Amino acid sequence: MSNISRRKFIITSSVVAVTSILAHGCSSSKSDSAKTDSATSSNSKLANNSPKVETTTAKLGFIALTDSAPLIIAKEKGFFTKYGMTDVEISKQKSWPVTRDNLKIGSSGGGIDGAHILSPMPYLLTINDKVPMYLLARLNINGQAISVAEKFKDLKIGLQSKLLKESVTKAKADKKSLKVAMTFPGGTHDLWMRYWLAAGGINPDQDVILQAVPPPQMVANMKVGTVDAFCVGEPWNAQLVSQKLGYTALSTGELWNDHPEKAFAMRQDWVDKNPNATQALLMAIMEAQQWCDQAENKEEMCKICADRKYFNVAVADILERAKGNIDYGDGRKEQNFAYRMKYWEDNASYPYKSHDTWFLTEEIRWGYLPKDTKVKEIVDQVNREDLWKQAAKALGVAAAEIPASSSRGVETFFDGVKFDSEKPEEYLKSLQIKKV
Image 1 (cartoon, rainbow, N blue to C red):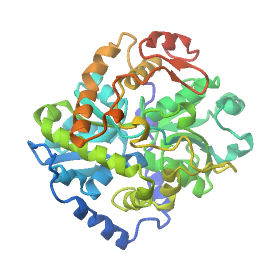
Image 2: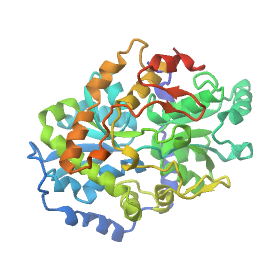
Image 3: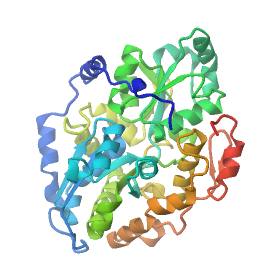
Image 4: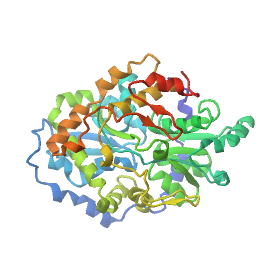
C-alpha cells in the first residue's frame, strides 16, 4: 500500500540514547506526582447522570503528545470514576504502529480497547487490517507544527514550502535527498507534510525521502542529523526550539484553520458489547476536554501531562504553546495565537463526517487506499457521531453546542484550494501533485 519501507522507520538504539539525554532532567518532581495522584478526590462521587455501565474496566492507549491530554485528565481528575468507569487504565504506547497493533489484538490479548489516535487510523484499521473500529469523538483541532533544522534558518521557511525547493533540488541532484519525517504513513502528520510540500511544487514521493519516526524521537533524530524536517504534535516542536536545534516553520492550523487532528476511537466489538460504558467513557473525556480548554486549568494540565509516567518532559516544553503563545524559534513570536490547539471550543470535540471524508480522499490521493474506496459507506460505518450526541445530551451540553449537521461546510486551505465533502472527486481532480 505504501512505498515507505519498514527500514525507514527510524528506531535505533543510538537515537533512544539521545532521547534520554534530551530529557535534560525535565521530569516533574515527586511533589507534582503526588498532586496528580490525589487529584481524583474532587470527582470521586458517582454522578447522578451516570449510565449503568456493563463493565467498569477499559484499557486505553495514548502517545506522548499534548493532544492526548483529555484522556490523561479524565483519569487524573477523576472524570472516568465520576461516570462509573472506576478501572480505566491509560497505557503509554511507544509509537503509532504499536497503537495499531495493540488495537488489533485488543485488551483480551494483552492490547488495548481504544486509544487517542490519528484520525485516519480507525479507517485504515477497519479497511486494511480488517479490525472494525468506531471513531467516537475528535480530541482536538489545530496544534501540530512543521519544523525544520537550524541549517535552514537563513531561508526563513514558513507557510510557503517553495522556499525549500532549491535545497530539495540540489540535495536530490547530489544523491543526498532531504529526509522528512512524519509519525505514521497515512496519518495526519503525513498528510499535513504532504499537503505543504505539494503546495510548493515538491513531490513528497519523488523529491524527498519521507519516513516515519515516533513522536518522542523526533528531536533526537534532528539532533543527530537523520531528519531535516518533521511534522509532529507538541511538545516536540517546542522542545526543538528550546534546545536550539531547529525552528517551527508553521503551525498546521495555518495550513487549514481549525483542522481536525486526533480522535478517540475504540474497537467496534467493545463498543457494541458495552454501549453504556462507552457513553460513560465519552462523557468523561468530553468533560475533560471542557476542563482542558479553560485558561485557568492550562498550567495544571501541563504539570500533570509532563509527569514521568506520561510525557516525561519539562513543563516549560508544553505550557506556552498550550496557552496559545508560540515562539517559532526564528524571531517570530505570537501571543494568544489564533491557531492554538483547542479541545472543546469551536466544536473541537465533534466528529464531523465531512472531515473524515477529507481524510479518506487524501488517503486515495497518495495511494494509501484504492481509488474505488466507497468513502461515504465506510465513513457512515466508522464515524459514530450519533454516540457523541447521545453522550453530549446526557452530559447536559447545551443544544447550541451540538452540531446539527454532519458537515462543517466547504473547507478552504491556505493555498486557496477548497474541499466540499459532497464533491470529493472535484477536489481530487484539482490537485496537481498526487499518485492517483
